[in-house]
Image (cartoon, rainbow, N blue to C red; front, side, top):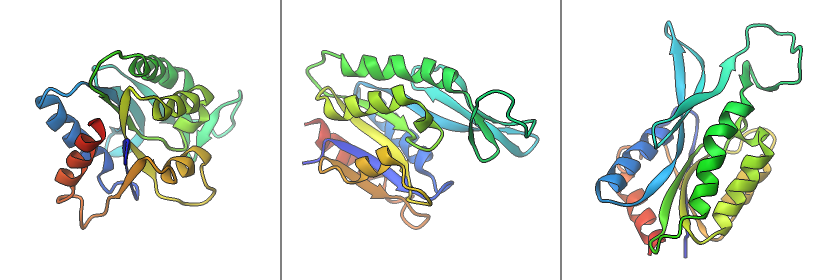
Length: 190
């Protein structure tokens, strides 16, 4: 019996777009939902970083292209991006803690897009995600990257959980998979 739903697939395949469509559909049918997604930041046609956008409408930087190659202070980097851990944690942690303490009779949805390399620099985030998955108050609707290079512990842990349904999103199925994802989320709420 699944308690949580995750989407996986290559970068740029449409995981976040699907999450947004599912979120809209659930919101419009009155389902309590909170969480965040990651959005590209572009300037002059090139990607300069990623923002965290919460479903309550707050936004802050997750990462930006680093201007200098010499990391003067200790920074968290993924490729050319420097991760703004403080900004990420300030936006995401209160929301995750809140979801765990929602005393609703019906299970709320908690959107976590994504659990990837940048986000996993935060030990507090890892802990909060584990608590949310273990708790009974929320159904997590999240995204995880496809396995590539060195395995990410939390990602592999989620992928192998018995109570998680994972959808593989591809260019072929991304336009037809929405109803299946919605149905899976709805059945998790029961």
